Image 1 (cartoon, rainbow, N blue to C red):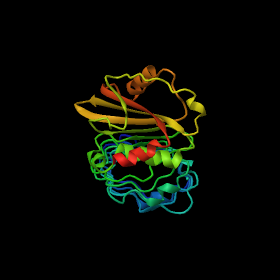
Image 2 (tube, rainbow, N blue to C red; image 1 turned 90 degrees about the vertical axis):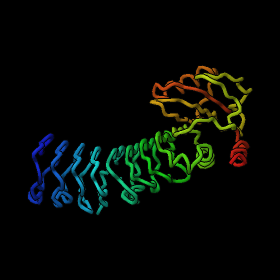
Image 3 (cartoon, rainbow, N blue to C red; image 1 turned 60 degrees about the vertical axis):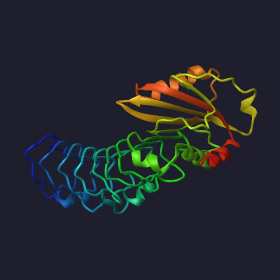
Image 4 (cartoon, rainbow, N blue to C red; image 1 turned 180 degrees about the horizontal axis):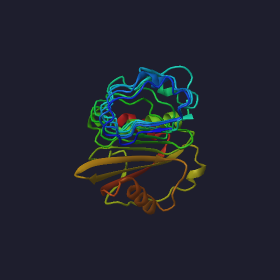
Length: 304
């Protein structure tokens, strides 16, 4: 193990070629260290590499082949130019479940297309990557955090969805993305692609109006509508879609959510809880709800 956390005066690392048994390398907060020796890419015994808040880091080896690597922490590497390609078999990673690349200065093409091979990945954090313009095809992910990716314009279509957990996309302050996509369109594509799974779908993005498709709307944070009779036995029923507008830090955002795994008996209580949990404590201005059937997907198309 080599723990160099907080070594403010460290300006370079040694050649790691002779450190073949190194399993843990911590370089967190080494603010003056600019480059890491290329030999780090062939540390076959390395299990954990912590680069958190290593803000001067510009490059990593173009290819890495750390066969034993299980944990990689590059959060806060705001000067990083490009994420390396995976060379050879890094079988312990394919098991990687969470990848957080917050504030890593990632730009167009910096996320390798083979990220889709990470079949166990459930959580992807790309917050504050302000130069990032598009996302490549992704594996079946549960949560994608792209808050503050102000240049982002394109996301995969149909949107990613984990067949076990559903999908949550948090895109606050992604104003260009909000201009190019419509949350209802994403909802439609999700429902068409994963209608049989009846798993939750949530998206949070900039917005100020509830689409008219949500026929039942009301000011405030709660709404109540009659429960349809025998809806669970209706083969055309897909789920319950909700939408709310909330204000946080003087910015207006919208949440659209669809859940087919449950049908609340008390919609007023359900939507109040939904907006309270997902608006991060912001003030809810308005909410809407709709019970979704297969025929409603065509209506979404007409609205576009």
